Length: 285
Image (cartoon, rainbow, N blue to C red; front, side):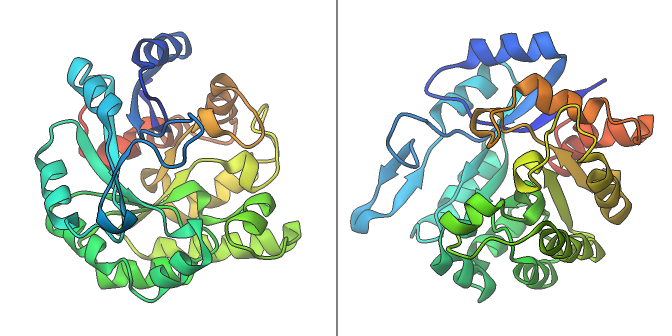
C-alpha cells in the first residue's frame, strides 16, 4: 500500500532517522511540517522588524531535494508577515513545497481574528497560487465554513480533527473543559463542514482530541467511520504527528491503529492512508 503520513516534524537534521523508521513501518512518503523541539518556541524562523516571526524550513527543503519521492513539505505563514504574498509565490515555485499552514488556534485573539476574516489575505493568496492550506483552529467550525464559502477555489484542510483536547482547550483556547457528549456534539459541527467540497479533514491527534487510545483503536474506529461517512474517504488524511503525540503513542501505534481498523474497506484504507493527501496536494506516487 502507498502509505503517506500527512504530518511529521523533523529538524534540525533527522532525515536519515526518519527514512529508517518509515522503511521499517512501510511508510512510502511523508509531508514535513518543520518544527524544532530545542526549547525555543516556533523555530526555525527569522525575526523581522516588529518581532514578526517568518518561518523557514531548511531541513524539509533539503529532505525534499535529496529524496523527492519520500518527502515534501508545507510552510507555515505568519498572518502578520508583511511579505506574505512574496513568500507564498516563492513556495508555489519551490518543487518540494506542496502546501501552506496557518495556526489561528494558538491564542484566543487569533481565533477571533480567524473568525472575523483576519486571515483572508493569506487564504486568498494561497488560492491564487494554487497551494492547499492547512489550518489549525480547533473548536471553530463556523470560521472554517465562512472561509470555505469565501474562497471556493482554496483547498482548505482542517487540522487535527478540528477539535481541541481538554488539555489544549484550557491552555491554548483558555476555555473550560467539556465532557465527552459535548465534545462529540462539537465534532458533529466539524463533520457538517463536509458540505463544502473544497474542505478536507486531517485525521491527526485523534487519540488526544477524543481521549481514546490509538492502539488497538476500538474507541476511535466509530469516530473515524462517522468522519468518512461525512467527508468521504477522499477528503480524510491520516497524520501521525508522532513527535508531539499527546498520549505518548509511537509512530507504529499511530499507523496501525488506522491500518488495522476492520471497519474500513480496502479502498477507504488506501484513500485515508495516502491517496487523499496525494490527490489534494497533487503529489504523484
